[in-house]
Amino acid sequence: MKWLVVVLVLAGCASTKLSYYTLAFVAGAPQRSLPLAIEVRRVGLAGYLDRPEIVRSPSSYRLQVSEGERWAEPLGRMLERVFAEDLVQRLPGASVFAESGGISSEADRVIELDIQRLDADEVGNVVLVAQLAVRREARGRPVAKILRLTAPAMPGLPMAAVVSLLVGQVADAAAGMVAG
Image 1 (spheres, rainbow, N blue to C red):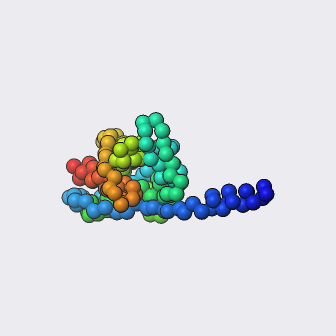
Image 2 (spheres, one colour):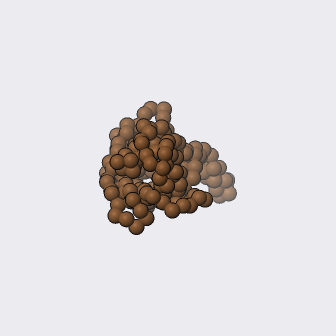
Image 3 (tube, helix red, strand yellow):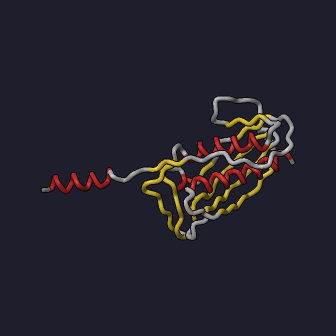
């Protein structure tokens, strides 16, 4: 009898269907840019986000980790990849490469991004809080800003799509800092 209970419990655990999500490129307004080499550094990520599960924040002090929704790749690497792709479109005169990628070069500009919050709040809005810095040279003094972005969750649209829109807004800010 005990074995039957164990088998039923394990079968119940195995029946959870997992859905995998990825972020995607979002087009923005191209900026005039010089033919610069731009390095996107590894994206910093708050520790609570460094997991395969998608995180929501249904209250100010409580996190909800999704049982059946996962990121398709490590979130920090995915953010870096999509952010760099967004920048390529926004800075058509520049060469953009990611620090963790297979290509390296002497950079004219270095972009650093630290994600401090990225989750859905108690009313379903997706909130992104990040520090963004652009350096004119690898060891130069950065021009930095804090971004607080919010987008409403849209019925039928996965949270990953809304996060992609917010990453596009971060890329808009970074492109403006590089071009300006």
